[in-house]
Image (tube, rainbow, N blue to C red):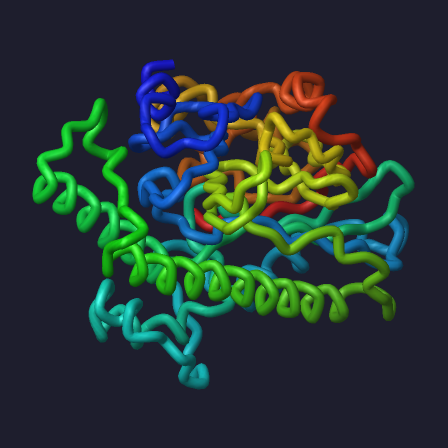
Length: 362
């Protein structure tokens, strides 16, 4: 609540302050599960450092009976095909165009690694899943962002914003709410860099999805992709029109849910996930939650739960069940069904997905 109140004090919010999603939890500077519309300024920490983090989900023509009895080999295929964890890299990628604003913010060394990290998952709560919907149709769902380069972009501009506050003698309720005014070069550089990182994250998910679908072809009969539900960010900033004004909408842990928009709200690796359709609620800036939201920190989860509990809570899911993923145990997250009930005015459920395979980036 302190973070939300601090955010609501910022003088350039338009028009009604902070829209808080039902999966909200504490973050750095701004809560995760927050949407703000700002006029002539952006708060980099409200966008976060995993710029462009988001979801990709596709439905296939496969049905549950088409999957092999054991999914262990498919999981190993995916883990071999997609580098996992921090710093994972593909080799011999073609060079990609990194604009000067990005190179200046992260340095040439990090920028040169960007191509090698395309098609890699990352760590934390990033994942790849095979799921079944209520009709038994097979879906592939994945969650990732702009990898190390997006993190470095975010950190650079958070620090630049703090330095600007010092130069202008601006005192804030929280130093991490430092902002970039629209009339500054830092703002213009940030807009260029953050848009590039969001595009990079989008392409990263596309490449991983292609790899997962190729892995699937080796284990099942021929199939088609029948629907792409979404490839969309939930940590990002975009120009939109709300309440009669063009504003910078920052969604930190929230997805856009305009009338008719399809989205993915994932559960933890032992819970259900949802394909949803937006209702275009204006008071939420046409947004909804991006997941269940954590109810405890990673450190607290590792202290609170055992491997035996992890095995129980992920029963029936082909996934790792060891200490390295203990902080992602379903019990560390809020009840997603309660989150969904609390946003019935924001989205309607189109499909309910149940994980049968989960690859974690840890």
